[in-house]
Image (tube, rainbow, N blue to C red):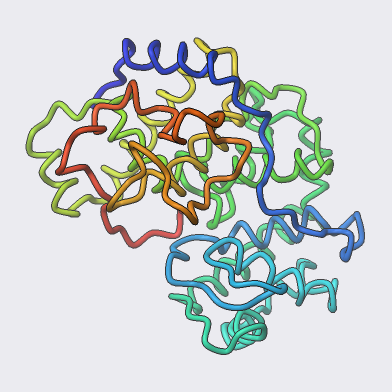
Length: 326
């Protein structure tokens, strides 16, 4: 597989014309219910167990929410009542039963997979902090000097990779945690150029359809279409997409973080596995208003003019993969 530089250039040019907004979360978490010193620790724990949440949904925080939206609000409610839940010693002892009760507390019908595995990831976070002699993940930021990457391997991203939940070679969770911490005003970085896109399955689907990367091995393409992708191949695919987004960033002048939020929202809301909104969004489309084209454009996909899949019936869809990386 390879990056299609020409397609990245066309995409970058289009993006400069669209003028996408700055990066920010669409979901506003009211972290004021947690002491300021513990907010990064809450995010550290939340992001660690946020993977494979497609089936998770229910009523929480006054509305029906799915996936990350549900999980973040459910955990926030629990941690607001007990700030010690994110301390290293509590994380070490977190049980599957305790986590299950927290997730199902807002809605007893909520379903989430591998509760034991997620509790194990939290336990490992506690071990990670204790082994490093840290009471808070904020200490990692301070010890790194605010650098994401350092030649002595002491950067935030490098040290986070020692925790099992953050060991993904493509650093999806690590980068997402750092984006959240930055946008919440918790951390600043001296080398923001290393804050790359946290690639997940929405961006895999979207970029394979756009054509920013090319799968030149016919047998591999068939594996993707049949949903028979190994973890090693998935890592290679996501790494190539990561690099393609970095190429678009370089050519468009937009930060990788801004591009991530733009792509993620568009692919999540409009470039659906089935019946994508290529020609126009139906009523009820969940794409945030700030990413929509102006009135008169019929709200067609803003990338439709450069997308390889706009008139293709047999579009690539998500391949199933059991992983805790994303």
